[in-house]
Length: 374
Image (spheres, helix red, strand yellow):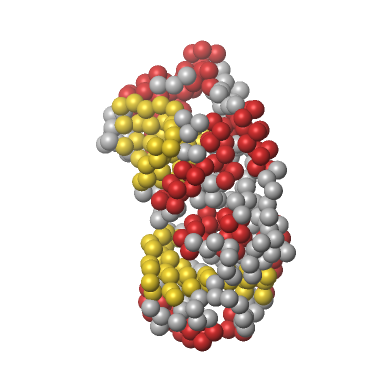
């Protein structure tokens, strides 16, 4: 099947590598998504092991589309809706892109809905209901250069929601972005990992789960279970392999999270416990300036406030100055990775970076910056 996977901006290359390792092939990379081909086993498997994708879309039809009429007829004639979408099943339509005469996504979605419903009524004299919150099918239409591509979305919820994080701080880092950033550090689990402002613990949880290839979302109900060609035996085989996978946590190095805010610290504690990692991640409720650690050099990570969502920019200057002095005085020989959404603030670290990778965090243009602490 042909599949599209949506990605955080800046992580497309890493998502392509992940999908290739899981069995996808003929992979192409674009801005904020990749497409690939795969068999049924791989399609089901990526839902349990892709740590970077937001969603998967299976392409089912394409046709030339110029206007309202060609859209209506193209949707009606390009796919076996009667075989796949019984009137007792609910659906909704989502649209991205536009053509010169189809520029309003809501109007376009209505036309797709009408085409399918009119076909159902012609055959059965009955029609599906529309469900926005809990549909059996999500039909996705993408318009570009007078070409329409119809896909089926494989899940209602975004796959970045792992289920371990009901408690988050004021500016939470999405789990798949955190996983991608950890991926870029190339942390291999052989050296310590410290998050000096760990917030709700996302970086550290994702780091451990990614390193040990812990399956995700195994208890989720997927929309592909409603598809006509759903291969239940193959799916259950992949699911059972994921659920029964043996994970060896014993070889983990020292992993520490530091969080000064008591309420946020308790959130992190709860999330780490829900992720099953309370015995493997040490949490410290204190200012990172109080950290006194004597380990083999490893990797320090940090997503500090940068004056866009949290903290006043002027107040944060002192924080960054303190951080730079503290790291240089106490962590010589370590790697330091900082997510920066404000280049004015990072200069107050007074540290020379060796790498800056552009990423988007919640719509903020950021850099994932690597420093070698001397």
